[in-house]
Length: 215
Image (cartoon, rainbow, N blue to C red; front, side, top):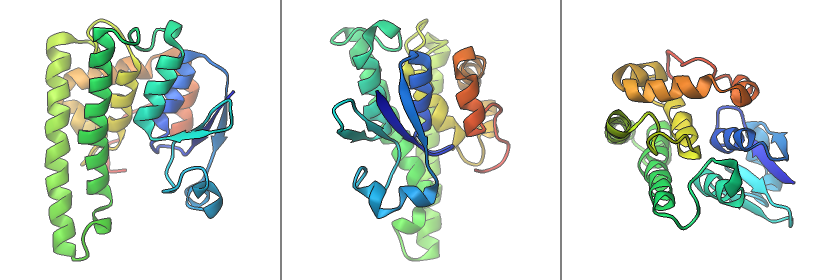
C-alpha cells in the first residue's frame, strides 16, 4: 500500500487528489511543517519537502510531478492519464513538466525570495519577476483550455488538471484574481471542486472555495 506524507495546502495536494480519484488503497500520513523539517523525515526526503510517497517495497519517491506521473502510469486502467507510450501520454507528460518547471518552481521563487538573495531590494525584484513569469505560464494554459478544453487534454479529464488546480491555489496576489483573469482555468477549477471523490480531500486542505487574499 502506498504511504503519502502530506501537509495541508502544500505540494502534496496534487498526489492526494490523484490518489482519491484513482480510488486505490493508500495510507495518508498528515504532517506538520515542523515534522517535515525534522532530521527523521529528511531520511525519507533529503531536502525536507513534501510530498513523499512510500512504495510497496519500502522505498520512497519525492517530487509532486514524479509522484503524479508514477501513480497514473502504475494504474493505467483508472482513466487518469493516457495509455503509456501513446502520443497523448507524451502530451500529458509534457504538460506536467511544463507546469512543474515554469509554474511550481517559479512560485517558490516568489514565495521564498529570501532564500535566493540577501538584500530586501533584490528579494523584491525576484518576487516581481517570478510573479510575472508564472502569470505568463498560466496564460499559456488558459489559452490552451480556451481553444482545446475544457480540460488540458481536451475532452478528457486527467491528473494534469489536478496538478494545475493545485498551482492555482498558490497564485499571487490571490487565487481568485487569477481565476477572474483566466476564466477557462476557473471553469476547470469549478469542475474539480464539484467532483464527489475529491470532497473530503478538498475540505481537508481547506480549498473548497477560491481564496481571495494571499496565502
